[in-house]
Image (cartoon, rainbow, N blue to C red):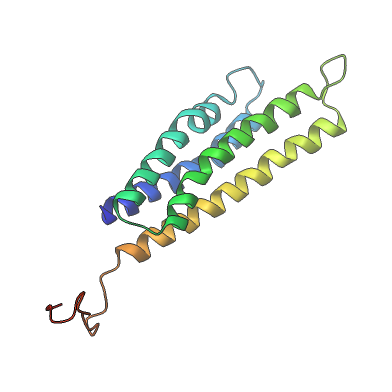
Length: 150
């Protein structure tokens, strides 16, 4: 299970990296139509939540510490925050539908939240790799109960 935890956390990290690529694709698509951010939306609203749930499941099955399990599920909450930020940014336009300084500031928080999410996923992947490392060869086994072999 620990190896699976490493693999799914790496897949999650790859999905987050691709999110930045897909955001750039949307930003640089000319003319920008409604589908410009389709890959970014699908990855953020479907792929990342599924990978987050799988990462959390494998963290629990790998008997990771509670803190790591909590960090593994955190990107799901950050995806919800991402959606709220995007909705607020899109709603902060003037009467003609043009971006306002407030809307652009809120939109900037979308990028900051994405960076925070990547940082969390990197931490989870590092923890997964550490958990999957074999114990040092010179480690002395400790008996669980007195008189029991280790």
